[in-house]
Image (cartoon, rainbow, N blue to C red; front, side):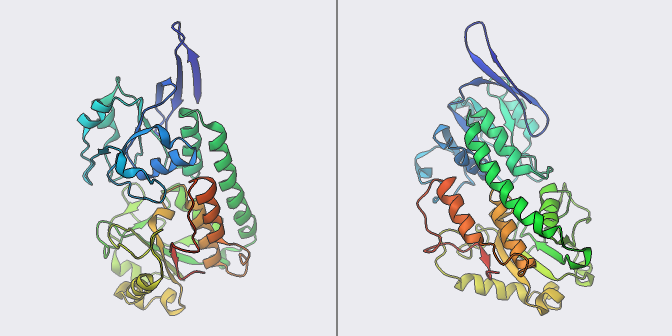
Length: 349
């Protein structure tokens, strides 16, 4: 829901409903933005509003997307959710953009600390199947970049529709089981996602797979510690191990020049006791991927990789690297060649 008004003094305002269902009124134009999650930084870049950012969070490190990172003030956040509110208040932004997620900062505490002087807007509902497109749409409204937002949404929806139209032909028996390993706080921790994260359920439905962790007890969709004994008894044909660059630097990412480190990490994953006796490893169906493809608006690139991994004959025409390159050129607006650098999925399906 969006309402635009003009006050007696001629000032324009906009009232938006954020991803938590809260109505927030902002003064237009929004020229000074502080955000607190790297996914929001990427969203602002997609809609060509990065020039309105006046400070970055300390988790935004992608110098390919954001070449001017070093010249902007940094708002310190900790894993436990402590935030430097004083720094935000000193900067006097027009809005603070946040992302509400389990195990992350307390959005209500942030609202109490900053409003009404500085409005707080939650973007990206991780419990919605269209989490990323709908969040980009909201950003477009806030930043008055609705055309740019719609261009990206159409791009994503076309990719999803292309894959989904083909996977519709698959019977339940043709949809393999997959276990997604998420690193957690350490690289050897076994975490995963349930289908409570609707975008994960959507990823499975569109690509033609079954999430073996779909119904595990979780904290809002995040399974912090998967029971190893349970996992060993589960039948599944594929493993997708996601990794964070902060825990495993130099394995995947834009600045990785070859697959040597990826091969080593892949071998280590294959040899883990929890995986080594699995059908997935026996069939050579363990893949590693950068977690940023799962939890950012780049999810559609992962969707293409997964579809090709799960059903190579059905999706032989997909070219995830070309799609990724188009994203970099059109929406990140950067001159970067994936032919020269960048590893995101190994082995390439």
